Image (cartoon, rainbow, N blue to C red; front, side, top):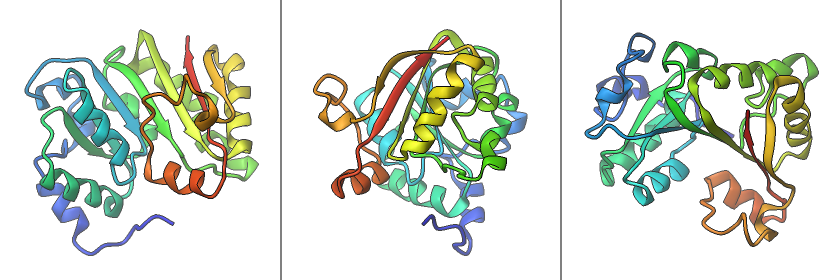
Length: 212
């Protein structure tokens, strides 16, 4: 269960140099928050930041942005950055629904979605991050040759995500229903906190890589 109410977390976020403030009014200026003008990759729903921080550490030639809705969760990532500052990583606190208000058309090279909320009720389907509604948003901000990588242990959510591809105009480059037993796809795989937890209790991890 995610932490959502830590006293003072919003104030700390508002003062943090690692957070892009007032992101909705920074459209077209995102690149100025990095020391180098490099390709941009984003993680939507980054949690405490383990995945994207390791990505940024291993790939200094890429600029990364972690997006997280909940202040108390983002706070944990900020605390990690204070211990291990990475010049090619910044955070944004925002709802993913507003993503096209922050990034320019074709500004993003790759999107990562890891273990997102499944929103199991049918009436909430459009809130799921791999839904056709969100795929339309991603289409706006991704470069023409950009891709999306999605991982989850929730088979129902993954089946839904795969079903959304064709009507949304996307194609699968790779689909696996057991990532950790796929020697090719598992090579170089960086685990999130949830991935480590779920795989340790025997849950198979599903993953796809998609393109238009």
